[in-house]
Length: 126
Image (cartoon, rainbow, N blue to C red; front, side, top):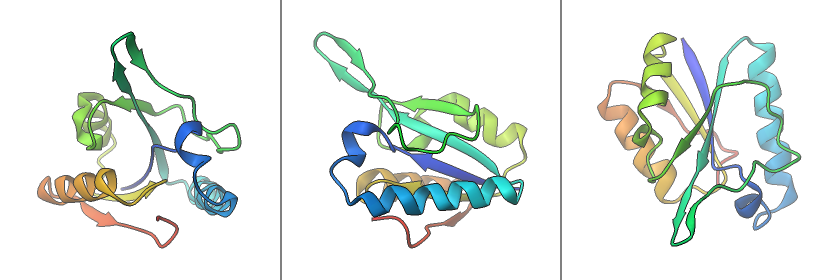
């Protein structure tokens, strides 16, 4: 089974990129839903002196799944619940969709590969 994992598509991050990025991500999410692919959303949390802060997903992001997880580190695997969700759903392939292709995607893709997942990084990523 394949899962689409949408990472860090939060308002604070998305507004720094072309509007077209969000459109392409939404197109892929809609396509995944039509193909009965599982979709998970990952939010990055920030630990501030005043406490934990998590900005909301971009209001234009298509949220078509209730599988929403938070992470405190770059890797999506920093949250035990995503690991359980992937195992419970017998996921063998992960397509990682991110707002920024720097550290979060690289670390998550490498860790997914080390855990035995096939990893797809679509061209919509930056």
